[in-house]
Length: 221
View 1 (cartoon, rainbow, N blue to C red):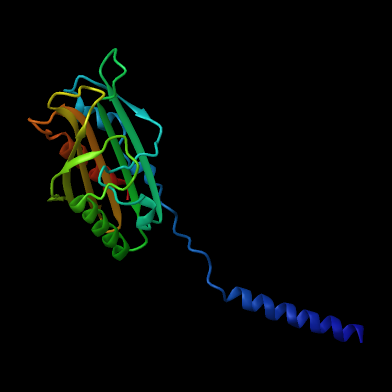
View 2 (spheres, rainbow, N blue to C red; view 1 turned 60 degrees about the vertical axis):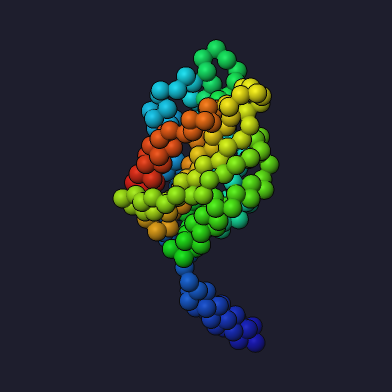
């Protein structure tokens, strides 16, 4: 009797092992590290060299990456995401007169990446700006389309008061915002906030940053 029970246990064990071996194996595809696709301090400093400011890396804050963001970036459904921020201050002054934020989001499929890009396009178009921010947006422009060697993108600009600089002048925050869909499944976001004369408007610095950001994101894909 004992030998019959032992034989039955062996048969059942073999059956369970066979069932287990037929289960799909975990994917061996490594998870890309989007940190390597983010702008570096040197890449941020180069196009901003003409400003009277010293740019340095700062810890990630709870501020939105884009001034017009309508929800947290987590809501876009990326498989993995990384962020990085930089501040700039004039020499020997505590005033922060420049802020750069960037994020890279990787998606499981082209369809998901395109859907996320469409969501960000909606943010830049309508500028809901529903997230807590240091500066209240008072005006925003409609986004403008652009292309890159490895993808497509949008630029938009928003403005806000800069009471830390002055209260009765034409100086304010100019918040340039950009998004690009790179190589089908990678989203790149860059924003450049600067305290400037709003009568003059922003320069070409954001375009230079975005060109570097998209090139780095494509090389790291």
